[in-house]
Image 1 (spheres, rainbow, N blue to C red):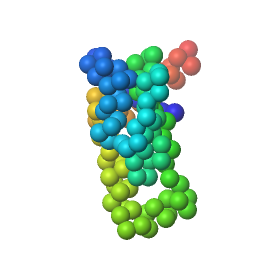
Image 2: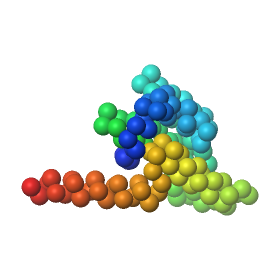
Image 3: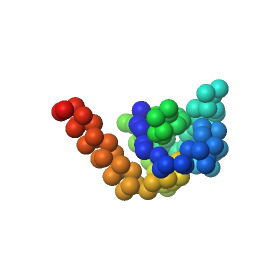
Length: 123
């Protein structure tokens, strides 16, 4: 499970997990939402994408991707490489919209969190 920082006010303006699930329908296929608002979907080499906003105001996502021989077969198919690139593009676009931060900003936020965590641990 990965957690991503979310820009202040974005969760409220999106409508929480319901808005997140609606956003997921624009990036992934086979979207299902459980009673707690956690969505599950898939696309291309992303076999399963499950996500929601947690109580700490972060985006919590669990992703399962094709690996090993299944990935090899997928990439060897006629549309495999294009579908793989599209999968990455959709994943990145989803994270951009769901967090309000681009890839560089998400990386910077993750570094900040790591620094805070290690400072707290050493104190």
